[in-house]
Image 1 (cartoon, rainbow, N blue to C red):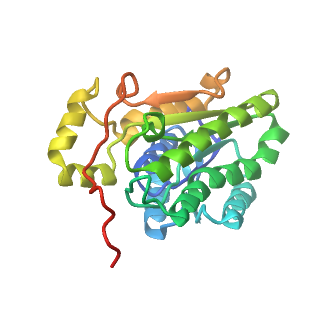
Image 2: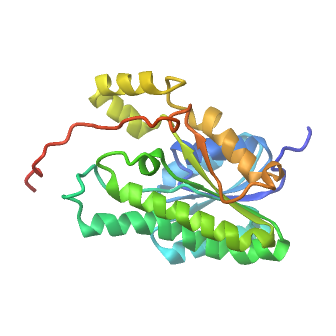
Length: 270
């Protein structure tokens, strides 16, 4: 069998137990990657690791809470111990915070958003950097969001964290370009378990959103989003760095409104 585009390349994917992370892991497995499935949920992570093996890749499951710097560093160390280096880092993990108006948002939710959505990515980059620098090669891809780009309502903590991550991306891309390391952002519009739940709760709103999207659908994590991540993870993107790529069915062109119903007054706490 011919070697895949990621044959023997060592990849760390955070939040690989579900959604886009899982879709990317499955797509990369078909290209022969060696994948560390960095996931907090053991059952979900072990499922993805098993799928990676079944699809032709090699897998290491590392139970990881990306909100803990030592756990990220430990995951990178486990990866290097297993395969000797790291070639590709996919920063995907996210966790935290219900929808909220700006005037309601609390400090804890904002702090957690930055820790998971921005700082965790920085910690992972810093841990992978020495290995990428030593080999003169690295590909880093971080998942951001149209929520921040288009300033979608009621997700201010998420929007802030993801836009800060885009600033981090450009800075690292500028500083690390001469080391053979590229760093890009991928903004998807994907169908997830969360979007399915929203769709069930507000079918009319989602029908309107679908109609406004140029391709009139959300993307499939494995079939629509992961191939773009694959491009950014391979030699094909050797001259691309510091960019934001939209895998969104054209949603970013004019912006797609996001305005779920929230009361004007904050609900009383139980």
